[in-house]
Image (cartoon, rainbow, N blue to C red):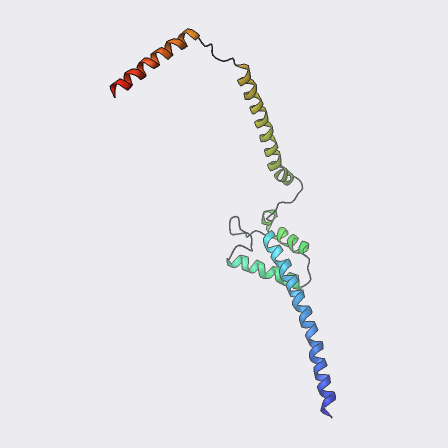
Length: 162
């Protein structure tokens, strides 16, 4: 009977100690998710056109480790992105900021598609009115009869030649 309270206390301790492990696991999952989001927003300084998530070189690995370290220290996503931008410049960001000259980069594709659509519309309209405006070629009935006679004559000669 002396062991019963100790056994209950041991079971309670095990049950209580499991909760922080579960909470830490969920916290680690959220941390990893945020880290992956940051990995996709930061370009590899050595690889052309690859984020640190895509690159497998040593620098990218170190940058990924730094992101995790900073997240574990409690820094926010915005602070980490600002750190990389201050260290490497704006070119390190996968998406250009939506201010200043970069604003043109965001709107240029939409503007280009719109202008292309307008040009195509007016070209089609111009071609369709030009086709309707040109009269059909003048057709001579006498020449038609002449061509039909010649065609029949040649077809008859062809049939006889077989």
